[in-house]
Image 1 (cartoon, rainbow, N blue to C red):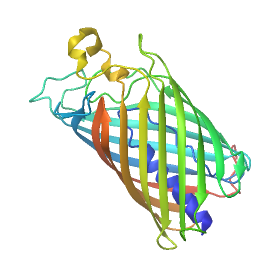
Image 2: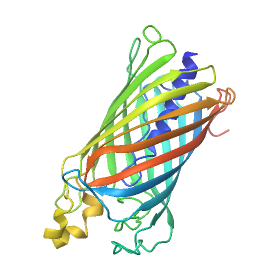
Image 3: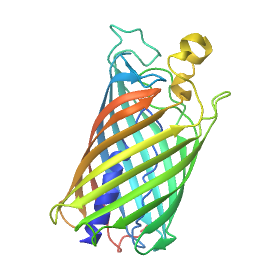
Length: 306
């Protein structure tokens, strides 16, 4: 049962991670590691709708709706009982739907979809403590796959390199709440500067999960972000030069909550669904999204390179 709980927690985080979208997507670093020679492939599709934007005071304003379809391809592999590698790449298809009533902000705001790959994430996790509480520090890099367009409501990302460092913690709650677990993560990202702005940020996420049946697990999730510096919206109207930069250099803070479920088809295949929405924030999108996906876990018999 504990193995199923831990597997469900990993899958649940994949669903939450892909909800960042217009903001940098953080890696799915988890406290629990796969066994040596074992791992998993995860595919996640997400449909995100943005109806309002949030200014520097946290107030909503209508700048035109945005629809985004994303696909996240993730891979995880256990090199040893303490060390695991993570990899994911995201493909984004985004459309600005307010171009008729609201002036477009960038060249991609044509009312048509503009599909392209976004960023590549490569990371490593090393478990340092695995008793009542599991502690696993991690490090990862974010590398844009190419120089994509960053100006516009429907821009797919910010085209910035990052170095992320942090720690994950997890605990099986069997002694307190049967068939349940809790986990959390904190990370600090050193982000490529945009002109005079330092965009380094802190992120945290947390998850409470419960195994409702032997095949079905449920979870409640949350995400928090705080950015050290950047451009405030709508102060850009007082600084014309900032208008060209704010898509990449916004001082974005937010809190998002959501939930999801995972259904285990068999010992190797799981299906997962998650919903997440912005509860509060500044200089960001008020986004809501639904994600669907599957995870295939491979056994010890599988070896990289044959």
